[in-house]
Length: 41
Image 1: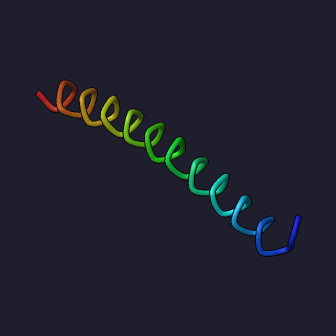
Image 2: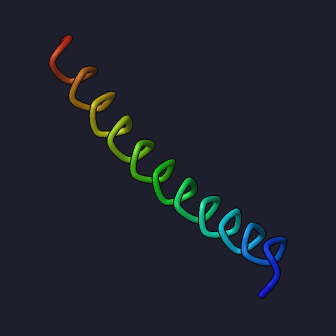
């Protein structure tokens, strides 16, 4: 495999991880926002 191919593969894996992280952060934020709204009342 060429170094270009390897870096493309690494970039693809990195983007996939970023998407997973973003989804996890969004879910955490949603739950934090939900509890924050409930506790402020």
